[in-house]
Length: 177
Image 1: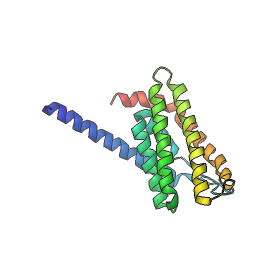
Image 2: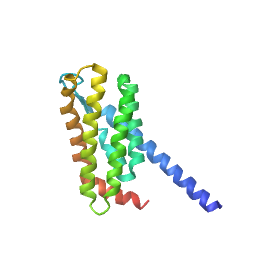
Image 3: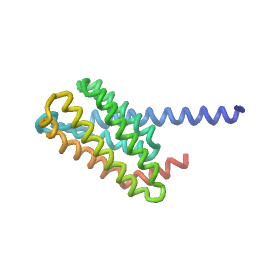
Image 4: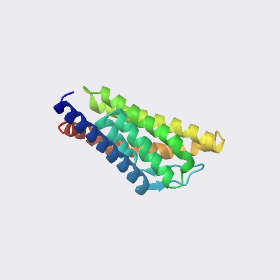
């Protein structure tokens, strides 16, 4: 490997590290400081905007960055905000949301809006199913977790409404750098 190749590889590694760290931080901050707890049965749902940077990371930078931003950003939120029992589940569920959303978005070069919508819808399904079974495990009840589904839907739909109009344009802009 020559000097130019090493410098380019190092620059790309540093850029990737910085982007991943930025989206972890954005996801953590948006989850921690922009949230509302719904007064519904069971967990009731925590509505937050952490899915906004998660979706942006997945759509703009792909599946790996989406998975890292979701898993670590929201997992850290759970660890430092009193939801510690949820952290391992969040790491897996939200990491899967970011990975799959990024994977689907990567496939949609000809029809980005369609694929971005499909990516966010699929992330919604992963969130509903993943957290339903998480609550079944944590609460040992099959009925109580149904109360969190409306909050999960609102959370992802609000994030999708915010992200959808800008994601493709931001992805094109990021590709220039």
